[in-house]
Every structure is written in structure tokens, then in C-alpha cells.
Length: 139
Image (cartoon, rainbow, N blue to C red; front, side):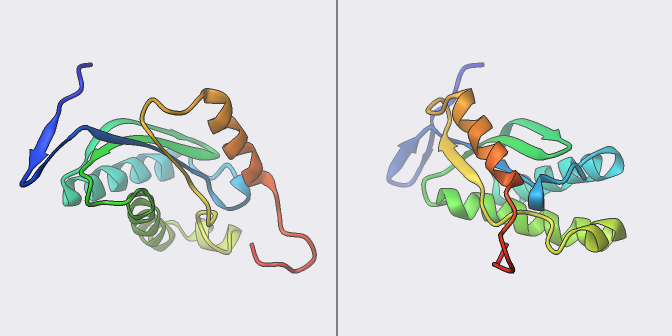
């Protein structure tokens, strides 16, 4: 797929992010109806901001998203918009997500510009989400 250069007043850009995030403790809760609803919510949030979803993959223990945005949106803003919006709605709609997890998503996420990250780096990021805090520390 050919990438498209977009423009806004004062800028021309082709900016895409690869965003990966996991449920708390990487619990495999993103299947069935939860997966379908999560995909709907991610697409709705992208539409709200005018962002283009290039690819979206929801696995039971993590989410991969390739999204094109404009330069005024920081990578952390993009990731947090998706995580906050989906957490709020999914936990309201699916009671088992409230009872199984203290929060839906882990606090961390992985964001890189599209094409600048290896599959091994993404896998290392996902694997670290299994770690639990030791002895009463914050999760």
C-alpha cells in the first residue's frame, strides 16, 4: 500500500505510529465479544480524531495498532486516547473485566514510528507485561 503525504497549514507530513498495549498482567481477556467491541471502539476513537487506522490486530493478551496521525498529536497522547476510551467503555459493558482486573490496561504502552521497529523489540515489550509488582508495590 502506497503511503500518502498529507498536509495541514504550514506542514506536509506522513506520520504513522505502531502502538502496542496489553491488559493488566497480560491476562488473555481480549477474546470473543470483548475483542469485537474493542475493535469498534478503537475505530470510533480514530474517526473522532480524524486518524487513519492502517492495521489493527487484537490478540487475547495484547493489541497491535498502526495508525496515521498528524504532527500535533504526540505518541503518548495517541496511545492514551485509545487506552482510556476503550477501558472506560469495556469495563462498563463487561462486568467480568471489572472483577478480574484492578484496571483494564497496564500503565505502559509501546509506541514507535511505523517501519522503525523490529518484531523482536515488540515481542520483548509484550513479554515484560507479564511482570507483577513485588511485595505490595504499585502495578
